[in-house]
Length: 129
Picture 1 (cartoon, rainbow, N blue to C red):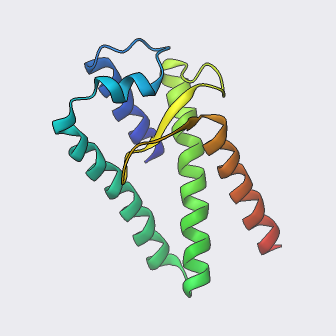
Picture 2: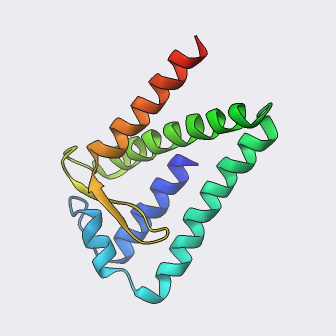
C-alpha cells in the first residue's frame, strides 16, 4: 500500500505540472480545492485499512494499538522509499512535505515523519523483547 500511495502522489504531481524536485507544499498550493475532499477520502481509506487490519489480527486492545502503530510506521517509511525510488524525491530530509490532509494539511520536514516512524518501530521492538 505504501508503494501504491507513492505512485498516486507521483501521478498527481505530474498531473499538476510539478517538477520532480518540487516540494509537496507546491503540490498543495496547486491542488484544486474541489478535489481536496477526494484526497482526504483516499487518506481516510488508508487509515481505515490499517485500523481494520489491526482489529482483525490483534488479540486485545493493546495488541491492536501496537499492530496499528507498527504497520503505520512501516507504511510511512516505505511511502518515502517509494517516492525516492520513483522520482528521487525527497532529495533532502529537510524538504518540506504535506504529511496528511486530515483534518487539515499537516506540514513538516521529511525528517520528522521518518524519525517518528523509526522511533515507533524501535519502541515497539523494545516493548516486545
